[in-house]
Each structure stands twice: as structure tokens, then as C-alpha cells.
Figure (cartoon, rainbow, N blue to C red):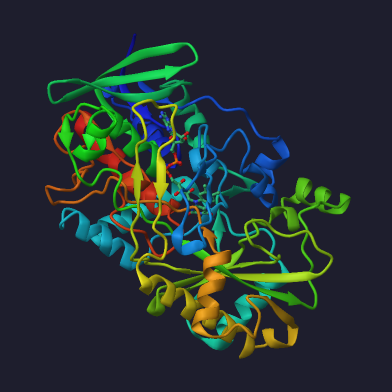
Length: 495
Ligand SMILES: Cc1cc2nc3c(=O)[nH]c(=O)nc-3n(C[C@H](O)[C@H](O)[C@H](O)COP(=O)(O)OP(=O)(O)OC[C@H]3O[C@@H](n4cnc5c(N)ncnc54)[C@H](O)[C@@H]3O)c2cc1C
């Protein structure tokens, strides 16, 4: 058994922001911060550094390698659900896009807090967070990205821009780097083990039970436990601790400590459907030439600095986002001699909600993931509308001169039924699960607007699980904004 002041469970996007803010506090009463993050086997260094190699990180030792159950609306396909493992969490393996929450997203957070937060307060936090993260402008753009951005202006249908990235001089960067600054480094300890469940004393959470190849252990916290294990692991830890839906817990022999129906429910994800075009020029390859390597090494630019999903458009009116890649992209870019562009379309505000189910009280048994994609028919309708919008972007702008043909779904597949079939066969996760331990002011919500685990003292939760719903774009910036906010609250508590 060991003791610390603060335990942070999971050193991912949210965990690193919280840890760095807590540890950075000069107040001597702050105390010792311990991050608990499971051990990893590192991916190849070139894959960790080169933005264009990010897909090689999926399936590596830095990925939890999760998978969904069969998806009835997706031709019963099982989707791989990568989740980052190791300090930096999913930011360690993600596509690096920095997508600040839109005004509507901030409004959603204000509503969830029942007015405890205001838009201007969140905007202020966001600008302070952005100074800390310093997302970078893209160092290089493919021909597909340039042409798409020009076309989006011509059609004037929504906003489109080149995404900023979590990069430093064209190299991958993740929030674990926040922990290594001189001020912070001495105040944080990292324990490489896995949290099984929480330890209680009455309604106080006083520590965590960990488990690894050496067996079980206990780590106690004088001041509190902050759970940041992400949208899948956080509800799993809560359920293994007896906090969750009674039926589910009793079925696998877990004693119920607090019946909380929403734990593991309310799961949302963005589902992306591809529209793929063969184009006349600009073949992209992440297989580097000597010149590309030299260019990237010396100047941090060139095709190796591309994150593939270089730019996109947000069509807020229609609740549609389009991601542009300079490749033939289903779940991986296809190796081919021809040039391609893929417009990946997703409904930004899906109505379908899924759930997670704990299979066993053992942390070694993965829980089952039921995303319930497209269960609400309106999600498919919006995606079909988005695919037609992608086609209009091509047909009604200068892009039309550049396109050879639409390879997938293919021009002839134009009826709703044909597009629905294509969505069901080819769409993929955009890797954005959220909402499985929602924050809200209602007594049924799992987390209170001041990030407390409802029903307990000395425990807080902040990560993707607490988002009441998906933000319109890629969620990492919104999650880190919540982490920044939670850390400020905790600093106030200590100060
Ligand atoms: C492949 C991929 C591409 C993506 N691309 C983008 C993008 O370009 N832009 C964007 O905005 N979003 C993107 N996302 C989503 C974004 O990265 C995540 O939403 C975000 O990182 C989630 O942050 P988090 O803090 O909730 O969880 P995570 O960052 O996943 O952190 C959770 C941490 O908890 C640890 N953990 C898990 N279980 C335990 C346990 N039992 N005990 C202790 N620790 C544990 C994990 O190892 C991990 O380090 C992508 C995600 C993936 C996987």
C-alpha cells in the first residue's frame, strides 16, 4: 500500500491537463500528484513522430485495441475501436486535429451545468487552454486539401478550413509533454499500473485498488481521486466499484454501492461515411522518398507533416462535417498508383445512443461495446444528405474538372436505398466515443456541474465520458477544455 495526496486515474488528454495544472500550482498545500497509467510497449519512433504515419499507431502497443459488438445497422460488422494507452492517452495515437468547440457546443455545456457556467467564462478558459496547448497551423497541404478549400468557398455552403494540429514544428505532440516542464516535473509521480476499482470509507473515496502482473495493490489519496480514464474505462471502473445500473451489476455478482442508471449508458460516437473520387493529379503517399524525409527532418514540412485528414468543412445548418483526405480511404489509405480524394461525411449530432456492458468483475475481461449506430433513422438521413452535399461540392465547383470518377459509392448509386447500403457497408468510427458518465444538474446525472462523482466525497471525474453529448467537431479540444475547468475548480478547493 502506498499514499499520495491526489490520484489521477489515467494520464490521457484530460488527465495530463488536470495533472499539469494541479502540479503547477505554487501553493505549498497542493500536495503530491500521482498519475496512474497502465504500462505500454512503445510503437516505432518514426510512427510516433511523423504525422503522416499516425495510422501505424493503431493496433500497436500504444492502443487498447478495443472492438465493438456486431452492429446490426452496419451489415453486422464489428468495428475496431482504438483507444490510446500510455501517457497522452488517445492524443498519443489520434489524428491530431484541434477543433475548438463551436458556440453551440459551449451552449450545450452551459445548459448541462444548468447555468453554473457561462459562455464567456468558457471562452476565457478556452483561450487560456489554447495558449497552453499551442495548436499549430498545418505545415503542408496536399493538392486535394487546397482544391477542396477553394471549392467550399465557391459553393458557399458552410465553413471550411485547414485544421490546426497538436504538432510542434510539424512533429506529433501530445499533452503528456505538459508534464515535463521544469515546474511540473518534480511534483508528479507516475505509477505504471491499472486501476481496478475505487476504495471507499463511508461516502468518501479514499483511494484505488490496482492490479497488474504482480497482483493487487492499494494506493490511498489524502485529498482525492480524479478519474480520467476515458469514455470506456471510466464507466468500467465505476461499475466494478458498485456504481451503475443495478440489474447489470447484480447479474455479474458486483455488490451495488450506488444505483446509477446512466453509468455506461448514453454512449455516442461520430460515424463517418466515405465518398471516394479518383482524381487527375496529386497522388499522395506516406511512403517517404529521401527528399520527403530530408524536408520533414530539416523543416518539419512536406507530405510527412500531413495528418491525412488535413482539412474539412462544417455545415452547421445541416449538422454535417466533411473530412478531406488526399487518399482512397476506407479504414486505411489504400496503396494505389492513382490519385484519390476521399470526402468523409458524418452527422455531427447523432441521435442514436449506445451502451457499454460489463461482462465480469475482473478488469482483465473487456466490456462489451454496443454503439447502436444508426438506430435512430434520422442519423442515416442526415448522412445521406451529407453524401449528396459532398457530391454537390464536386459537381458544382472547379473540383469537377479535376475528378476522373466517383469510385465509391459510385455515381449510379444515387437512390436513398443505395446510399443507405453504402453507409451500412463502408462507414467507420471516427473514434469519438463520449457520454457514458454524463455531467448534469439533474439528480440522475452521474457527475455534478462541479465535476464531483454524485453521491460521494473526494472524487471527481473529467474526460470524454462526462460530455452530455457529442460536440459538433472532433472532441479533444472540448474534453481538454473541461479538464482545464475541472483543474481550476480543484485548485480553488486547495487554495
Ligand atoms: C485513432 C484516434 C483518432 C482520433 N483523432 C482525433 C482528432 O484528430 N481530433 C480530436 O479532437 N479527437 C480525436 N480523437 C478523439 C480524442 O483523441 C479523444 O476523444 C480524447 O483523447 C479522449 O480523451 P480522454 O481524456 O477522455 O481519454 P484518453 O485520452 O483516451 O485517456 C484515458 C487514459 O486512461 C488510461 N486508462 C484506461 N484504463 C485505465 C485504468 N483501468 N487504470 C488507469 N488508467 C487507465 C488510458 O490508458 C489513457 O491513457 C481520436 C481518437 C482516436 C483513438
